[in-house]
Image (tube, rainbow, N blue to C red; front, side, top):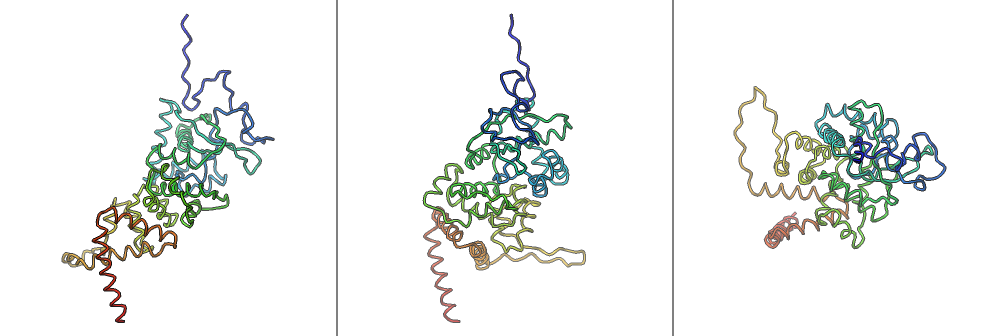
Length: 382
């Protein structure tokens, strides 16, 4: 007698509805249900609705747009209301549109291939006495299901595979992020910061309004011996490269969100930071709109608007080497001088490393010594 063929269920279910698996609705907390003991002591969970989950607000890779983050995390909007608001934003903003399209494509792939990897996390008590499943890894899968639910106008919530982890870690979050897809420079900066803070046992304060302020704490820490060596295998980056990334966090949060949304490269952001802070927003917007490279930003010269009454102007003469060199030194000064003492030491250390690796260290040192002598002569003559 031929064996009975197993029915293929929805990717959002991903499990057969037989007696061998206990439904989450039967043994796990539902919204509004108060438990007398921690769910970690109850039977293992296999499936869960998105409305019973909450992403980690201090996850280094930010997905939700800043304009709706507060409403979601404060409980003013459900995950599905937030997904609907996100879709509305995506119709007006290319950066949001690109992100929601990727997430919707992931949600659609669930039907074809199933939910290959579970969402991991742990049960955490909510302020109202309930428990919510705090997502450690898998936030993209969470939002993919929420967006798909809204687009399809589904009547029943999806069920997602979850796995309870007794001891969630930042290290696991970062590794998951880096394997999922290439993170933006801003996300990498937050990843480095989160690993440093985790190693130093500095946990985020729930009262922090701006999550970037938590990551910025890493820039003010004096790193204990061996810390960089612990982080390097996870990030797969050198210490100088990680210091470069941390310096990105000097940008205001609104500009970090913008740079993150459009995946601006770290080199571009580094050049922007070398400019006076009053020009940062303008240069970031220009970098996005005109797809500027780091060299473009470094050589950018603001040109006045040309009107019909203006007379044609002769081409600008090529800058003399002295002026070009002065511009480079000023950018170096602006980038380093404004840093705090610890960050400045790290930046100078990083610059020395890069100059040494370039093979021009000896020649550059001779030029700097000569320049130093000439500046001292002028200072003495004042």
